[in-house]
Length: 316
Image 1 (cartoon, rainbow, N blue to C red):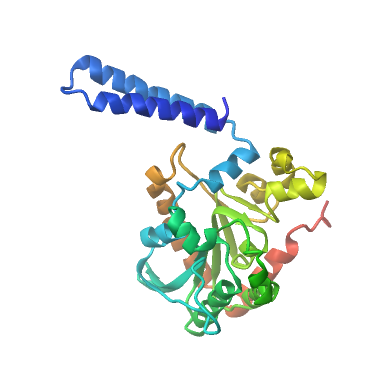
Image 2: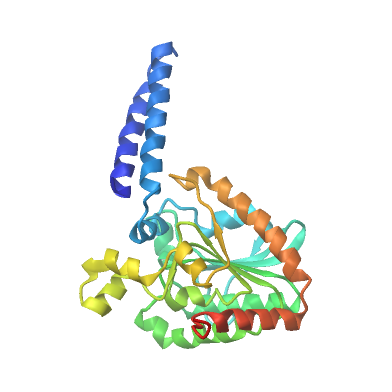
């Protein structure tokens, strides 16, 4: 059974449960049927999630029902104060950022923002930032460095916006400048891939001392469809491409690209998101305490060595 087939079956079972709730009374037979339906849902989901392919994880990473970055900020941090604009041209809704408190300590939080419905997605360009978004992010990072605040970034984008206007406004330069400047930040930086981490649009927020991923997130140089189009001139081979790309959290942990996998619940992430929020809170507390003990020079050297070692085959 494929993941999509399993989800269709779960919807059918949910419909049956919905019909039961409309019945008056709570006799033994009704409760027994309800329990059996719940167990059937659990069996179907466990079976499907036990055999996820790389492309299944791409599908899960892209699901519009996943919590967006604003929800992560609201559930992990306190007193978030959003800061807007790049101080050059305009505010880009595809990047959200500002100051917040984590366990009473000021931090700077930045992330790619996707909408929860079509109207919100149009407003934030489906999480695909223009150069103004990356300039806003960099402005907030430099501010964090000035005031010695740790930086936490959340990545969830298919990539930077590739439109003509974005190129005219310096998209390539904005991304490259973020990569350069992030590599020299003297405060702790932690990046968390919570959905789809695509291309330079994701990397522009990911030059960090620690890079984490949710279990069903993906992180890659481009989409599987784009990879298949370039390699085979056939976007329909995206499923095959995703297996070759090594874009899952497990693959990237093995390759040393990321440092930690945040486990996800089986089934609807939004309904069980507290499990993920809790893990992030615990790991952030531990990691910020450890990184906070390091000198500025040690932070710079650790970040430099981390990225220089990716793809190093000298020890093979």
